[in-house]
Image 1 (cartoon, rainbow, N blue to C red):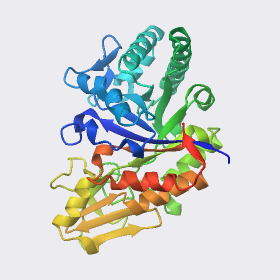
Image 2 (cartoon, rainbow, N blue to C red; image 1 turned 90 degrees about the horizontal axis):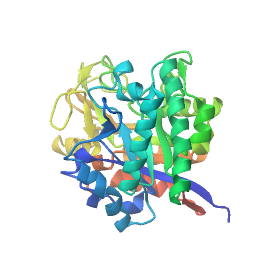
Image 3 (cartoon, rainbow, N blue to C red; image 1 turned 120 degrees about the horizontal axis):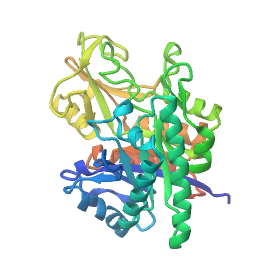
Amino acid sequence: MAFKIFVNGGYWFTHTNTHFPISKIDTNLFTHLFCGGCVSINPQTYELSISNSTKPLIDQFSKAIKEKNHEVKTLLSINESEDDAKGDHGRFAAMARDSSNRATFIRSLISKARESNFDGVDLQWLYPSSREEMANFEALILECYNDFVKEGKECHKPRLILVATVFYLPYIGKDDGVMYPIETMRRTLDWVNVIAYDIFTPISSSNETGPSSALFNNPSKATLGGYFGIRTWIEKGMPTKRMIFGLPFHGWAWKLERSYNHNVFSPAQGPAQGQNISMEGLIEYRNVKKFIVDNNNVTNVLIDHKYPIAYTHCDNTWIAYESEETITAKIAKAKINLAMLGYFASNVAADDDHHSLAKAASREWRKSYGYYWW
C-alpha cells in the first residue's frame, strides 16, 4: 500500500489560556500544533520578545502536548506586534532589512525553540508589502534554513521545521503585485500555511455582506476565493505538497442595512455589534452557536453551497462562518482536487466544547487509508 504524508495543524494562542488551557486540546485530532499569540520581535534588539506573563505558557506548551501525544510536532509561531504590523513600521520589516539584525533574530529563534522543546518555527510576516520587503523575506528564510541545517548537525538533532504563513495569493497587491520568492520558498520551507480566509470582513467589505472564507466565488469576483488563490500558487511554481490550507474557527458579523435582505452580498453597514462580537465584527464559532441558541434561530441557519459558507441572521445581525458541513466540503477539495499537504485551523480555542469543527476536519481528511503524519 502506498503511503502519503500529511499535516493536520492547529493554532493555540496564549491569550486563550483562561477559557481554553493547553490541557483542553484534543491532540488526537492534530499532527502539528502551533503555539503563538504573544511571541513577536523586540524592536530594539531584534531578538524574540515574550512577555513575562506568557513565557511560562510558551515554555510548557511542547511538554504538555507531547505528554498527551508524543507523535504530535509542535511549532513556535512568531508574529507581528498588533500595534506595529504595517509596512516599514512592522517589526519583521525592520528586522529583515539588515543582515546583522536577521542573524540576531535567527540565533534567538533557534535558542528559544530548542530551550522550549519545539520541533520547528512558523514565521508570520503578514505581509511583505514592497519588492524590497519581499527580497528581505527571501533573505530571511534562506538564512533561517541554512542556520537551521548547521545547528541541527552541530547538536546532532533533527533540523528544526521551517514554515511561513502566507497570503492566499502568491502576490501582494493587484496585477501580480509583489511576488513571493517561490523558488527560494520551495528550497527552504517545509511548507507554507495559506490563509485562505478573512477574504471578506465587515472592515474590508463594509457595504455588503460577504463569504468571509469563500473557496469559490461569483465569476465577477473569481479572484476572491481560496481555490483561485491555491491554483495561482500552483501555476507560479509552488508544489501542492508544500502548501496547507487555512480554515478559520471564527466567523464575521455584519450589520444588515435591511433585516429582510439577508443573503450573501446583501447591503450592510459595517460590523455588527453585540455580545461576543469584536469591534471589527469577529465572532468565534463557539459563540456563533451561542448566538443561534440565544435567538432561537435554528430556522435561520443556512448553507450557501456556491462558496461554500454557512451563515445565520437575526434582526440586523448577519454572520458568515464555517460549519461542520462547510469544513468537510473544503477539506475534501483541498485533499482530492488540489492534492494539498494538509490543513491548519485557527484557532483551536474558538471551536465548541465538543471540538466539532476539528473533528469534522480530521474525520474528512483521514477517511482514506494509507496516510501517515509528516
